[in-house]
Image (cartoon, rainbow, N blue to C red; front, side, top):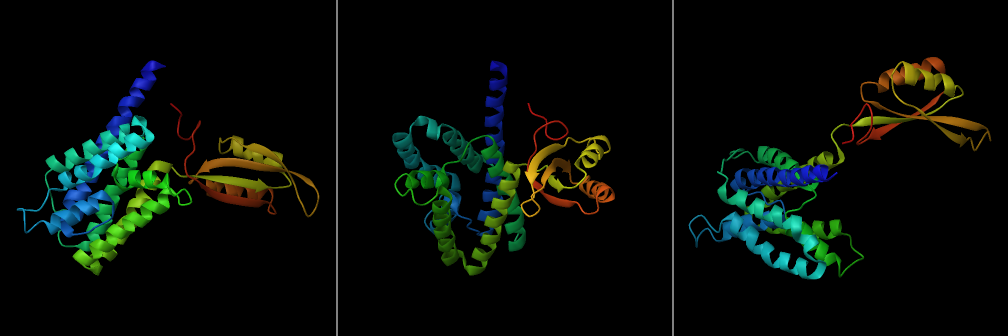
Length: 289
């Protein structure tokens, strides 16, 4: 048991380190290079670098602003919620700031703002998703929102984050122009969708509920022809008052067409409900560790 926990511990931190490397790539080589402010402390760092460009050669480095903003936040979080609250966020923040400092800068998208929004959003989304899969964060506005939410509990952390990031994007609009702000919104949307997809699982399956007069025959073809499990759920038709057995099963996307055809052959009057199953653990799908 201890060996499994040790392996998971290393895997979590590996995900955080690799994920922050991808985040730094998007921030350094896409968003900063094209002037897209997508919220978060990285967005503030891009703004500070632009504002100080005439004072310091090249402006204040992104990593320096990022870590400077996070230092008081970490101490505050430690004091309010304890060290366990900031432990992995501290690793994520140090890793991100290090990557921002040492990673070479490539202007990946050139002057194409659409490419910058799309590819920057995808790369940043993958990076954030990996950090979250490692059960970490990088501090920033998500930690700030968690601390603020302690005092205004009628707002969720997500709502507070949206408000803070929205303010940063608005400031970016005044600095870099409304066109870049509009492209930044595209990037923010992609970051959210990609990171959510990575966290929830990329192996989408289909779950089906089948209401039929021939549940035994339908279950048999599911188990024998598709080699999938089926579960009978007791139900009652509220209009007819009849007891019914509802067949529940999960299949992959390629099998759903065949399943519907088989059900139609057995019972043309069957009622079939199909919906997405984001992530399925178990035999035949994602195996449990």
